[in-house]
Length: 262
Image 1 (cartoon, helix red, strand yellow):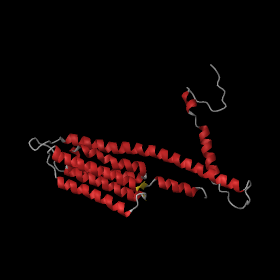
Image 2 (tube, helix red, strand yellow; image 1 turned 135 degrees about the horizontal axis):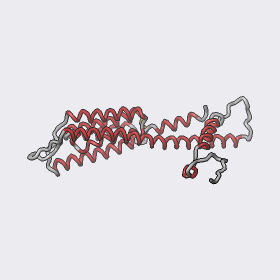
Image 3 (cartoon, helix red, strand yellow; image 1 turned 180 degrees about the vertical axis):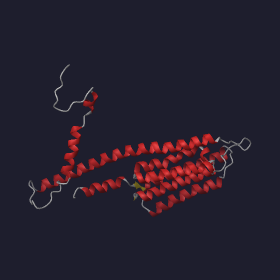
């Protein structure tokens, strides 16, 4: 098929992530995590393993520098590599939460971030695996975690029912928001693919028409022959779909039907 190759290439590019996007998001996370740890330790005077937290954050910064040196900024990552980088972000957040109270820490809701990015840019299989990994990390933090940074004189110990509620909210947020983000992004991607296919057929038809007004060889395949049946099916389906103005009335009538007054 002549027209299917470029369309498939465009569709595969829609499932890849630019490296510079993930690098910038990780730098934003590194800066935010560093400021939060420093404010809690020196600003609020709460006890926490600050050097261990800074070491974990430094590891994320080192990974950013490494991938920036290894790949150009405009490099587009394959879905598998992008999923591994997002899994690292999830694991890094899980380690920080392990050091600072587990799910008692209000920043536990940040588990949703990598899953949301995956839902908008990666295939559903990668998003499902990343969501299961985030839920597994959150489940582990229910039972294994360090103390929540708080005043030493009045230690804060949240009840288990509250921690279970936080875990349930993370699970529902990952499932609900991730699914809806994927649906919205998939609709936009399908529309972009349809526009790209239309432009491709238009350019192909224009080049053929300019070369000759009649197809010179009957034994050679026409480059538009593969796309015409697909567009006919789309147009037929479109013509059967009621428009917004037609759906606004009490009852939709097919085109050509005469409306009789009661």
